[in-house]
Amino acid sequence: MAPAFSAPSGAVGNMLGGREFPVVTWYKDPGLRHLYLLLGTVIMVSATNGFDGSMMNGLQTVDNWKNYFTPSDSERGLLNAILSVGSMVAIPISPWLADWRGRRIAIIIGIIIMFIGVALQSASVNLGMFIAARFLIGFGVSLAHGAAPLLVTELAHFQHRARITSLYNTTWYLGSIVAAWTTYGTFRIENTWSWRIPSILQAAPAAIMLSCIWMVPESPRWLISRDRTEEALHVLAKYHANGDEADELVQFEFTEIQETIRIEAALGSGSISELWSTKGNRHRMLICIFAGLFSQWSGNSLVSYYIGDILTMINIRDAGDQNLINGVLNIWNMIVAGSMAFAVDRAGRRPLFLISTAGMCTMFVCWTIASKFAVENDSKAAGRAVVALIFLYYTFYNIAWSGLLIGYTVEILPFEIRARGMAVMFMFVNLALFFNNYVNPVALDKIGWKYYIVYDCWLAVEFLFVYFFFVETRYTPLEEIAKYFGDVPIEKVIENVEEKVAHTIEEKPVKKEA
Figure 1: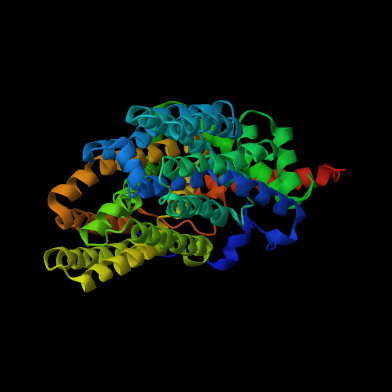
Figure 2 (figure 1 turned 60 degrees about the vertical axis):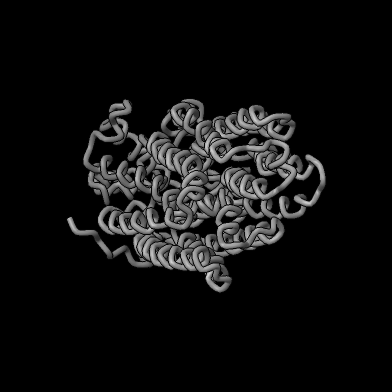
């Protein structure tokens, strides 16, 4: 089947359950202002990942850290890869915990484990202790990371869901910026505090989350799946209609969620095989698996973890210059990724992914050519071109792959397999990270710039996969995205929703929160 380029028009963006609703401006609505302030703390989970990547990038340019631990190339690979190992060990537990005890509990447990890891990392006296601490950090972050995007997408108002969920992963750069500039500010300290201070600050995003998570409501979808329907209705009414449970939008949301979860539960088996039991789910899993791989196998992990090696290769050797470039790059990434998160509905998912992937491929080929001249001809101009091309490459990466990696994969998964499907995606993210972080430093050391050619070819494969398999979902409510995969009778759901809501509104008196 040929890929579909068309997407619903802007007028369809306010449709829910077959009914068009007025456009809601979130900052003019008290309930939504309160909700998004709380969700703003939940999306900080991604910032902890960003902090770690940038911190390890920066620490590998700090002389005191290198002299204290004296890691070999393979040990440096393990130091970076062990975080992914911890994440992968937690991944089978993460969806089970999020589905069994709820999204909030999974986040809380993950944050507490991460705190323990940060404490051990900051107090490390040898390389083994540092590695063990990073394993715990990866384990804790994975538990929280597996539940946080679910909570965000399942709580957000349907008109704003795509944008706020896309913002989730862009906070990676917020953590990365803090880490990069902290390392830049401490690398001149002539003792172990040059690397212990950045390590301690890794707990900052988690501290914010742990302070606020108690005020964040549980997912109404999870509550409905557990037959806690009154609580679910209360959450939807409080935050989407300022307490009015009889509000037409709330009734449509509540009923559509109920109907969809009921049908999914009836059609599903509850086993792991459900992930591939239907044609629609197989399509979803293909997208999740390859999106996870592409997000890290696009050359970006070279800069995320080994920017020092890349810059040294082109004769930018000063630690101050390397940290400065890393810090400025992360600010630029945050600006681009944050801006593009607001374009996901207007531009559409497919166009953004296609432009992003084609642009990355083009920039990486140019980066490879410039690196050849910088290394083999000792060309300073080519070296400067490599730095510029790194910025251009990341501009294209952030058009889609930063925000939509989470925003797109979480929305295409129906509730019944959402936690497990995201776990599969995160598993492949971490497999790719483990491979990259273990292989990249060795490959860069052995074959230098020629290693880039592997990514040039792979990026072309990525473009073809996106073209043929990624479907457009813009302006579509969460429960109704199933219609693009053909395995849930959405038309019947909408018909039932309209009938039940009409009956409810006629029978139920208006009830407002005191």
